[in-house]
Image (cartoon, rainbow, N blue to C red; front, top):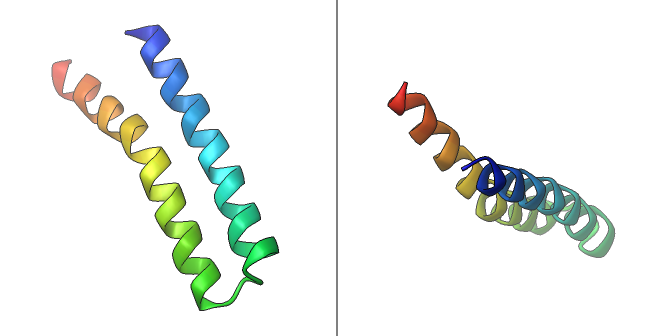
Length: 59
């Protein structure tokens, strides 16, 4: 389970960096950039958040 958690944390970190780059640099940081950034961050962080919530409920 720890290895799974590590991969999800790496995915979330890469997603946050990619979302910031796409939203700010490629789309100019306007409303569309913020929306795309939010979608990328949500899609890449959701597995990590879900795993953390499941682990919390197990304890």
